[in-house]
Image (tube, one colour):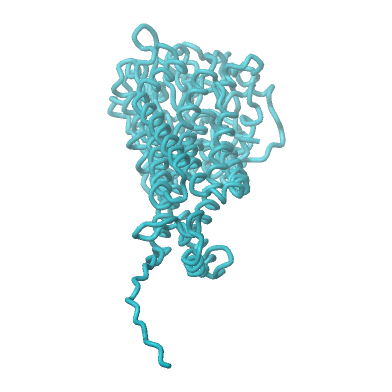
Length: 579
């Protein structure tokens, strides 16, 4: 018996579209890695720069920030293991926290310095916190990109593949297809490729952030606003990745949490950005007092002038008192006039952008030319145009005998011997204390060797070498360095130093009741050869307010009492002023 054939109508099988290729998620993830790496390096450089400005000794501050951050990054990578099962929400919250802490770090660091005088431990705390958060980024992103095919919803709706609603046959098939896409248990070569991509994006982002900080953010926005804007970019990039490409991994509550946290962070950053100018003004008054009259940021440093209307002006460079109008004459007379005992027609001043050393040199009869090598044009411009400073330096920069060269003194001297037609009779090194790192190379044996190339026969070099009584090791290291470079030296010091004048690096140190305040300036008068120069004033020296022949003899004895013998010289490859 033949059974009749029953033809059933064709059934329409509803197929789930294949999962979105992993590359559609890979590239946004790599883009966010790029942005986050750039932001992370900006936070790092901003901490180093601000700490060097507020605390001083840039080598130490860079070492502290970098070592603490690298350690913290390793710690953050370990802690990120606990968030791998909730990588999307974890990454969104971590980026919000990183944007808040990194973006406000400069703000808080400067506030602590201005109002409390202490910033070292705050620097360490921010370095640790930022490092932990940066270290957690890559493991979480790796987890997200490795399992991207399981987590991406196919176009056409449905539950998240591989998630709570993705069970059953279709989910298994999709998971199987994703096995070779690099998820755990998949192709190890593809997993290695994913790691390589992530680190490549991370390193390129760090390059861009490292270049953007000095060339874009600092000149255009400044340290405070630059950090705040960087934080905003960081928050937007992290939240956008999680809320758009991995939104199916978020429940309604976690999605609201990520949105709320990042909106709050952006609100804080925006408010701080609006208040930056008022904050800077208030912090500046807290640091310098109520007499702030001029405050400018040059390409190299912050320059602040206080007083000048009712009394002599004070000049601060990067928070350190460089010129105290009340007693600067004691320093500059002692620096310049002992070196003018002899031929002095041509004078070279290294530093001296305030014009005060030039003022003293121009007072001496017979001076025909003064060359000032100052790296910061902004300081010279202010000394020339500010009424109080110009009156203090006697309009030195308007004298036709004065020529200003804006260059790094070390590099200028390397080629000066080929350009200078006549040698200099006197070279005056009017620089900050040698313990301040940017000045250290100008106290090195190699630098004094370059000076010798432009020094006339019998010419004299005078060096400000920091306080002889308070920092004798640095002072006598400078002496040893000069002698190693072929000079014979005569040390002396001048008393009457205003507290805080070019003082140590941290305002907290100056405020400490236990720290001895420097009360002198130490100088070294040097000539080429083995016979030390005579320490006396020229016969035609102008009238001086603080210096007399008997005073110079006492100044020499006072410096000799602090002598430390056997110190090695300082060189470029082995600077010793921080020992």
